[in-house]
Amino acid sequence: MRQSLSKLVLAALVLAMVSGMAYGGGRSEPASSGSAASGVAVKPAKISLMASTMIPDPANNQEAITAAYEKMTGIKLEFIKPAHNEYNQRVDLAFASGDLPDAFEAVPKYAIFAANGALWDATDAFYASPISKRSHVYVADTIKVGGRLYGIPGAHGNGCITYVRRDWLDKLGLKMPTNWNEFYNMLVAFRDKDPDGDGIKNTIPFITAGVVDPMYLRDFYYGENTQPGFFIKNGKIVDGMYDPDFKAGLTRLAQAYKEGLVDQESVTNTTAGARDKFYTGKVGVFTYWAGQWNQNLQSNLEKTVPTAIVEAMPPIQGTVLIDRPAASTLCIPSANKNPLGIFKYLAEVAYDGGEGQMLFIHGVEGVHWKREGNVYSRLPDAVNPQQLFEKVFVNPTICMYEWDDPIKDQEDLMVSLNLFNKNAKPSFTLPSSEDITSIQTELETARQEIVSKIVMGVLSVDEGLAQYKNQYDADVQQCLKIMNDLYSK
Image (tube, rainbow, N blue to C red; front, side, top):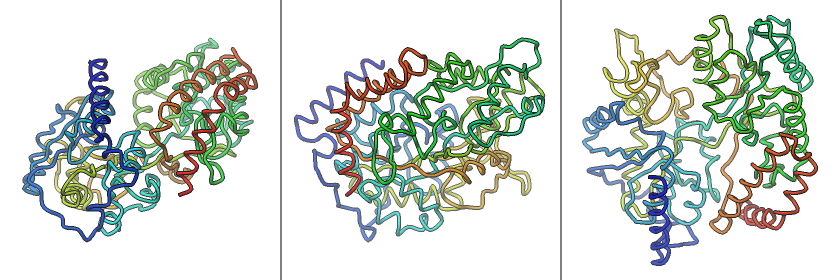
């Protein structure tokens, strides 16, 4: 299916580009029609929404949500939810074919779509809307392109925080580390002092899903958003493979791996594989999502080790937690003839602070949640009955629109999330261009290969970084020039 879909996307893109229609007809300037908040919002008879994470599975009673929305507004709502691993391709195909939904959840190519005029400019409408007055409005800044907003954000991007086995710390008489030396010494103790008490040195001090994604390796990298890819440093976009802070962090990571302080399968670990290994009770430290996952890690680990305690660690000295760019972003194609109507009757309803927000966060009463007197609570998830239904559009713990949420059972999730929010700094969507997308993909592949070889000891840090620069410097400089030129505008 994936191969056939890829071929279909490619064919459609070629056809669209030949006819001059791909991604807004190749316009170099964003479309301005309908971008003013003073335009007319016509109530649509139907709204189609294509999304990946912002729509529950069909088996999770989608029809109850659309029926409740139609009863509330008189508008039919059509959910289009492709398979998660095909979502980006389906959005590409929709633009290439011209068969566009009224709104869709943003994709990684959001900045390119915006720059090419494929997305409606929502800036004026958003800031004139009542929903922005109740929002954490700075979150919208993280997805601006050229100073303009081409989507309606729904939530904080959130990010990862480091979780430590508190019961292991207590058993070994250790305190939560506050700097690199203490963190390193904790990992050594977890390796050597049998914290799980089975009489065998078989514990894994630290586990990570891959060795490239900076989200899972914040404790190793000093500085703000330091990573092997492109990031903003001192007001300029840089390549981390040239950055001294990244080199220092990579040196720490490679040394820790060599000493057995990092799971030896980390290079190929998936997130699911890393989680499953953590649940065995043999892992001491795991950097993963703040909020809901604190509870998930604790409850799943307790099945193996009933006395286990999973505690979030404040960032050690010199490191910064990263709040990703806004998530759950609704985009409206610029080709839509009624963008203000879609904005008013979808986004403004979903984040109205009342009945609409209740529906688009918690779902439908009696299906996704229940009320007993003045007590509101979530019902079991229809797909995974062992868990409670989480959300429709956005998780309530990271929603960027303030409201009086009647369901209070999320409070126990806020311990790690509050710690994260206290210490995190926002990251921003980087500008991009179709001229460099293939180059960026090639560079990402090269970084993955070279960093993996460095961590495994196949290459020294200096050898690996030199190899990258020797082979890819021209491509890096081309990308940096284009991206920094766009960033400075």
